[in-house]
Figure 1 (tube, rainbow, N blue to C red):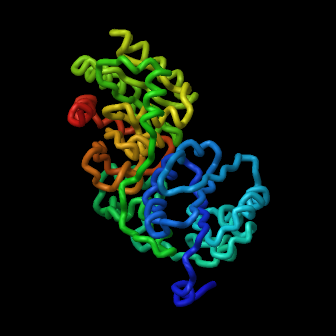
Figure 2 (figure 1 turned 90 degrees about the vertical axis):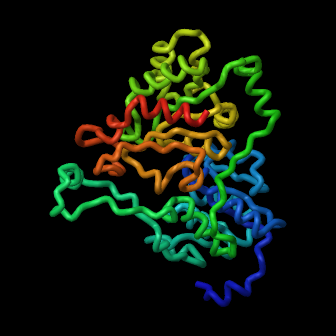
Figure 3 (figure 1 turned 30 degrees about the vertical axis):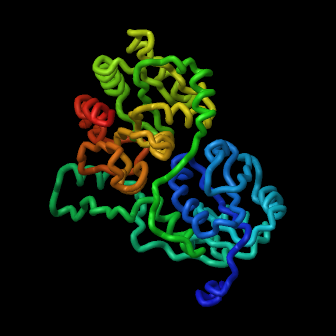
Length: 376
């Protein structure tokens, strides 16, 4: 590996590859690091290697010159062949997997930077040590959860205080700093054009709408432990609609279509109260529609991060996960309302609750409705 002194003498890279993350929310949290990279290397050609499913996220992003996509069935050798054509001087490998580092090594990129992890350090020229501030998202055992909820002071188990620098976006900023970038955070940023907004309004019949548009995202891919109960979402949507005469745009993937139809049927009056877009938009169309919303009410999921990065305030229900680690925007960003119940077993990072789901059930409809109304 290169010594620190040798690295400082290296010329600035003219062509930089960033190996992007594989999930929507994680990808949005990398944007501060990408923006700092552009700030440090204003004249460099910066390319992002990203799963094809996320390609539309990066259209017109100011940090990037190019996106290179890959499909789920493409192996590391096929990806490396694509990368070799780019003649990159340096690669910033954001995922922690051995495969992500292998891709850059197979491509013959001379400078390869990533976090030190088992089974991959040999593929890197600079293996960056883990940050002292990093907090591992460890799943709690059932026994630990039961001891926490009994509040037994002799159990020795408690929720530690999590500093703002533990947030995931600092992980990417710290890694980019190995190339000399500023490690201080900036607001996550995505971009849609006025032309895209106008086209979406026309396509989805929103051009002449005179009432406010709010977003509702009741799903979460990770599992049911991240989903606030549907009947509570419906109750909030009904109350807010009655008080504001708004239109709710319901978002989600194909797996959320049944849930979206239930919301639509429960709030059938007036006819403009709910428009169902679950499973009906591309990623780019979802971005534009989120940009149109005055506020998004959502679980902790990818569209939460997208909305915040587009400048839309979000109200988020947190149960099994931690807003300190993966919340939207910058940690403590005032435009957003991040709601928790204070359950002692939260965050557990489990997909399903092994007890009574108190972390979500104890977030009341009144509290959520007031949070939505406070943002508009």
